[in-house]
Length: 152
Image 1 (cartoon, one colour):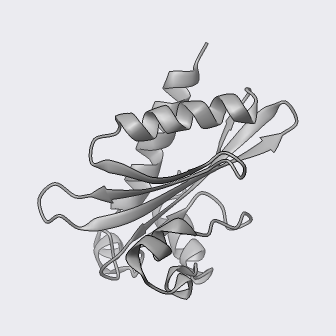
Image 2 (image 1 turned 30 degrees about the horizontal axis):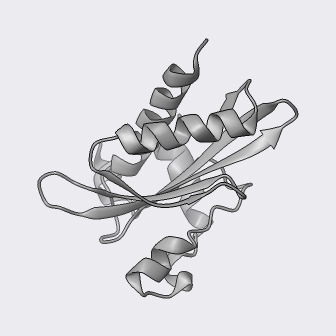
């Protein structure tokens, strides 16, 4: 628990092999897109703290998975969808914590893998050097809800 509280991790991704760049949120905040660059050193820390955070493979076409992800995003309390891009199969959203009203940014990206899909995510805190594990939990919860929604 000590490392969780002191580690400088506030940006969590499902994989360091897929580029997950926010495009609409920096514009809506009128900040530089560079302020959203992912630091690859984070992934080493993340692997130690949250090895469970991985992409989700679903044996359904990308279009079906994207539609399900949109539904989950819209149903998730305190998650505001900022952008839906049906061409790149990406969702950008902002979540607000209930007590302190901290805002974190969320990106969902669905890639085709033959007749299946792979869901990647990124969740980034806007403030602070540590999110105390909130974004790893957020990703896991979203992927679990999506998998449950799309189960046959």
